[in-house]
Amino acid sequence: MRKKVITVFCVLCGVGLAFGNNVRISGVDLRQYDRKAGEAQVVFDVSWENSWRNTVNHDAVWVFVKFCQQEDGEWQHALLAPESEGHVAPVGCKIDVA
Image (tube, rainbow, N blue to C red; front, side, top):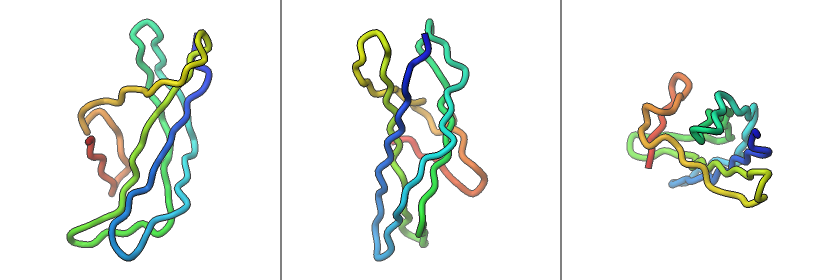
């Protein structure tokens, strides 16, 4: 059975005088769900105001995905692809996997 709820939690990290704010997650969609393999593709858009970048520093968003299975009702952290190549970023953006 499909996972009943996907929650994406983002924490904004900023360094410098300008701070990003109003982080928004939109367009959340669960695709290519394979219960037997325990895998799914989660698609969403992340945006925030006052994004900034200079030659040394930039702001960023840390993304965590959690899910809850109907059987036990316990929230669990999803494991994300361990390489940056396992994620898709729009043109002009970069994903660095910690």
